[in-house]
Length: 115
Length: 115
Image 1 (cartoon, each protein chain N blue to C red):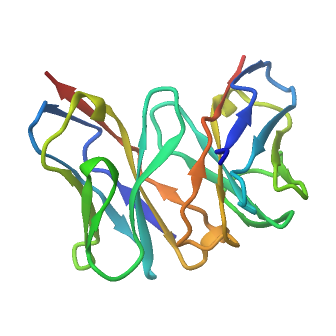
Image 2 (cartoon, helix red, strand yellow):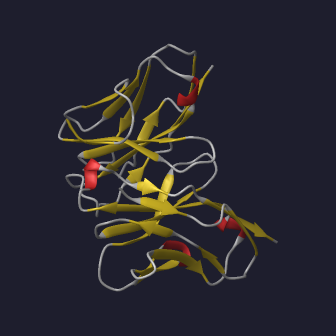
């Protein structure tokens, strides 16, 4: 059974640029969530996708957007990068429809540095 | 809205000693509670979770936690720690709305095991 994978592992961008991060869900999982973890902080919920539709969103501006594909893989897009976007971005998948009781399985993350 | 407070940012403990990592939450509805561990440069791994029923929950690697509704706490304990337990530990909460709010994490507790 393949776990959650993310690419790339590290990324350096400059302020104002756009970035796309990718995630492959664990086999059999159809819900994916994205989190931002700033240095020394706990992860913060960005949004969740179930069956290719966004079904929940945290307190992040619209320049953070996402997609989920028919094979349940997912992308996180961030436009107009700001210095504060520097963080570890975590993808998590679960096997249900996104209920709060579901266990979320996390990938290793993509570390983004914005200069 | 939910919130999680992890009362200690760092907990130093000698090897083979017991440890307790404290977590308090606030929510206006019934919650589900989770403890995750994050080893350096890795994603999050689930240690244990409370959904309902018995308030004492046992997890992996010898960890357990007790849900206390009156004190809105979910403290994590281990009777004897090992060097390999050195990591960051996160308490998280969700509710029946699930995807709409995602998981809300505390800021984490760094467990430092001293030989």
